[in-house]
Length: 617
Image 1 (cartoon, rainbow, N blue to C red):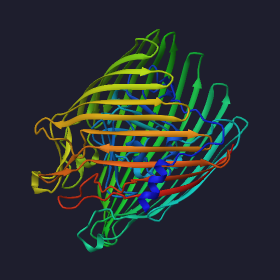
Image 2 (image 1 turned 90 degrees about the horizontal axis):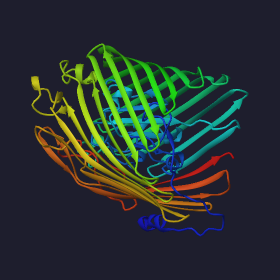
Image 3 (image 1 turned 180 degrees about the vertical axis):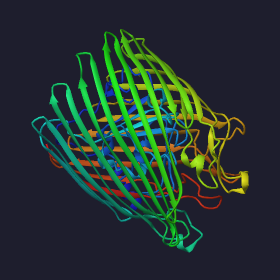
Image 4 (image 1 turned 120 degrees about the vertical axis):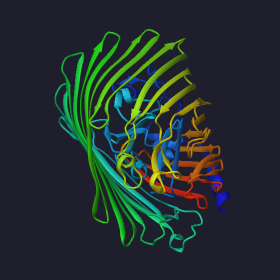
């Protein structure tokens, strides 16, 4: 009966008694991630996706990893239910070969190199830009796979704006969030809070130990705020702050197994229009990531990361483009403890100079970037990028791009006891890609092919480690990731829109010809949307081919899967909206990651989340 009711949510087509909404796809948007300056998506030479606020709202009750999984070239995998470790792979690269920025601040852990996506609630997010191209020539170390930049909510006008929502769903899940934006003369400011709590599911499927045969709960409390003061025309000072605290239980063989993750990011930025054509931005920011883990009553550990960033960027508007010059400094500190005893205290810093140029002239567009990094630990790295685009017609566009990138090993990979190797060299990569795009008022399509060669690829080995350790970080040699991504959007009429994406890739280690762990060779999404007056309905089909995982030298096969999800929303009046979200409607039993050769990490079955939303108009 539960499946029948949920299938009704998928197939229900409401009858309209109100004026219709037009859901034609956006033809042009402004992005900043692709070049560090404002740029139209029509002239970008790289592979970029924008996730707007409406798409984010449709996934209320879900996670950031769920949202990213719907995007072209993005895979995600988790170690259990809500609140467990979530990992993102862009075009087959590792989760630590990715830079994640929240309002321009790095918030990843310098210890592991990964970002706690599970602790960034969708309720705080206004917009996301995903750059699927090596970007070390713009952002420095780690951007082998690309950059994900998250923008928290901010008011768009001078009027006071209040919003909030409350929801409940399966697995005893509850959420609530509220926020406001307002202004006073030349000052704009706002704040928001969010809370999510669930009893969850067991992190492991069929755990063998009795202590792990329970539900692993999760709680998250987050907040963000900002203030912008325009003290004279063209000159402003802004501050922003983000904090997120999450606590989740996990299956570690003890009823006391839990982890607490705390993230914090804040910054101050001074923007100056020095002349009509010359703009300057001076920004200082701090990102912190803290993890406290309890395995059992007598064993615990702490990992604390702090990253301080200083950036001074100048943009010069020319007759056919923009010239950018920037200085970046990054300082990283890491402290780890085991049972209260300090086990690691390390730091390093990086100074860099960036030169960039974006140009547009008639049917031609170009992007050039060059960056020199000096790392106190690894020395100098020079990276560059070049891209070119040509409009064959008003509808057709061709682009090609080359980029080099690097990644310095994480502190864990260098120094962690019984795991690290202080002699590990940095990863280096060269990527080439090309795309063909078609765009009209009702139909958009893009085909992108890519070939990324990564040298000194660092992998976690679970067999053959020196000194007989169970796991260790070591160079696997060369990895080549070849592939293609196809994405499209079609406005069938004023009510219906169909969109989808498909990625075919081969991320393999040259020496063994093995696929990288947990990477699918084929994956994609198909999304159907309907909008008519107060009603909005969408359904998603997400599918992936089989993947490999590894336990020591044993190759494990993770079967392919297909999931059906749906959202139905009804706008009661201009301020109030009722929304229901159903995930895994067909109750598929699938696996995203293996815990060992005999036990898999769990995934959620059919689940529903209902929310009531207020947005002051």
